[in-house]
Image 1 (cartoon, rainbow, N blue to C red):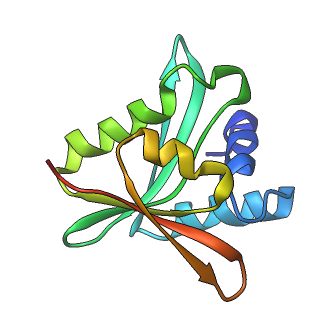
Image 2 (cartoon, helix red, strand yellow):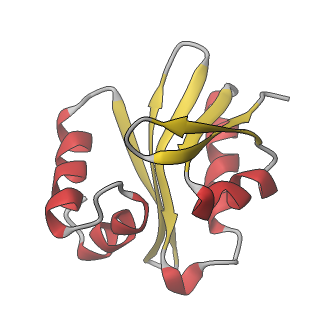
Length: 129
């Protein structure tokens, strides 16, 4: 997780993409045993990252991002599929307008709401089939 490429990709998805915010996100995943993190690697290159938490009946994605040079190649949707195959649970995420279409393309249903501090947000849910 201390790889500079991982930090760069985390910055795309973290609420605070500053170096300090990314460092805090990395620390959270290292120190909290309830949080899981994996990288999508092809040809020895890290192309995407996914941070999530397992609850009794669902997987909650906290962050998911793909390197800017690997976008529109199916890496993000492949990470979603990997979570489905690994856990066979509903998958949920909260996102902003910038990423809601990604979730919709992956089959998630979405619900718009107003977050007290972050403004317009979307709850995204992918049910186990």
